[in-house]
Length: 346
Ligand code: SF4
Ligand SMILES: [Zn+2]
Image (tube, rainbow, N blue to C red):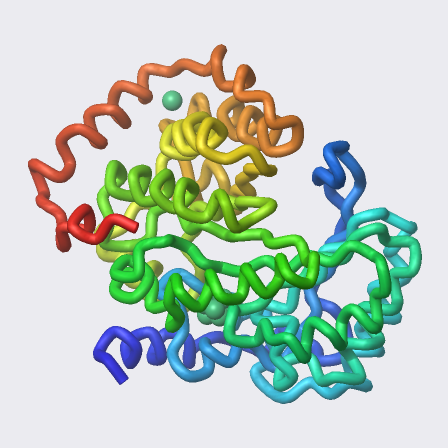
């Protein structure tokens, strides 16, 4: 195990599981999303499981999902009980997004009988969406899911984070390669499963400008392989390396202007659905600007994510945009970059 992997393990092992019940879902809610080109209601549920297998061995530098997992085995019977609770809030939304703070396809997190129960339950759904690391995307698993879902639409989100293997390895500690993502994405295409790719905006150790470049390079690289690109700007989660750096003033979450630029330019590079879900926006732990323009910029980002119209960004202005531009222009010169990431373009 590398030093970074061991360091991440020390943070992920501190995750607190005490508030997570094995028989109730962590949360469920309804939100707007896009489906087949229209804006629809989406039902979102986070099931409590044992947690991500990678987080138990080491974990990603920014991920505090361990705080939302049980940390102990959750049986199929427990998951079916969670499902019954979640179904009380389900009102036939056509898009159902199932999260489990890890990999839905990992049988150690979601045992096979629970996989079947969870996928079969939302009978009114046109499309079901789950998440998985690429190593669990196999021919056998996809055939099993197709038997359960029949002709219904299915989507798998993969947290690729970046197309740059060095950034993913040294700044994110993701534990898989771009080649593994590509193999999984082509298998999903073969089985007509929709591919959603998560791209992390501003991993630690990258300057603001490098983060923007890395995001755009990644959008360019994955555009032919994915149906949806979801930008995930870092927010500072508990018990993570990112939180440790943030406490020492060695990490700042991305500016909202970085997200605006990434969406605006990314839209020209990718013809599929490009979106950005901002968590903790406007707070010190989340992506933020100066404080006075944050609300307007966040509204434009969520409008763009739903309607795909980049003109929502045109009216945005604030004096802090100059400060952001200056940071992008001079940060590498004044503080230097820890690593010359540009040497490893995707
Ligand atoms: S980001 Fe995903 S793969 Fe990484 S530790 Fe968190 S749940 Fe696991
Ligand atoms: Zn501002």
